[in-house]
Length: 225
Ligand code: ADE
Image (cartoon, rainbow, N blue to C red; front, side, top):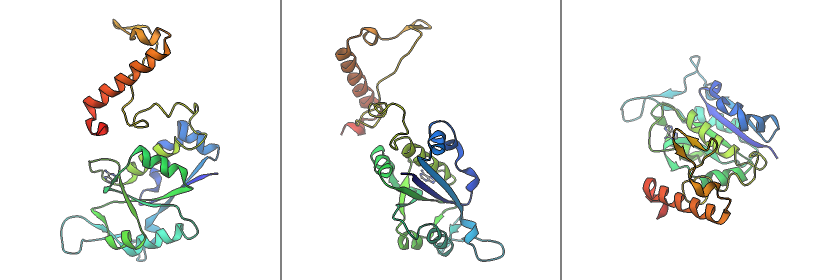
């Protein structure tokens, strides 16, 4: 089954961006996922193809019009029940659990916000689910949409080479990942921790669990609560 991502944006040229390369790019070539980027401006009605207007009540910036965006959304989602996401710093924070849930579905429709925001009425009327990728403000939702898709595509069935390689990484077990090492045995006087080359797999697992716990306690104590 092909996971279908439809992006509504004023900058369709930004897609597939980095997702055309590496793991995601190969998965796309194999037909495991597909992306189409729709130009919101194509649904404008005036000769200047205006998509935004000044905020009701005054204030800085411009607001994406509900009527134009609604037409764009209705154009792409008549016959499916893919979740409709709106990338926004006001959204619920994206988590690895949410990424896994989205990857189990048939795809996503993602609206990329621009300007100061999107008219609240189209968010309500089309049931847009606001998603944030972190507590900082980007100039538009496009890099956030690429980030979300990157995280989802890599966990689609059959995309990641080694089926186990996803299960020990950061967040999958509620902890940050333990440190990794590879050759050379000595780098600028720093050695690989001896336990990792001991061949004692029980000891290695224990060391990794302890490192993961210590790192998480130091950097992300919120994850341990
Ligand atoms: N658009 C602007 N900032 C964003 C953020 N932090 N997350 C998602 N979309 C955004």
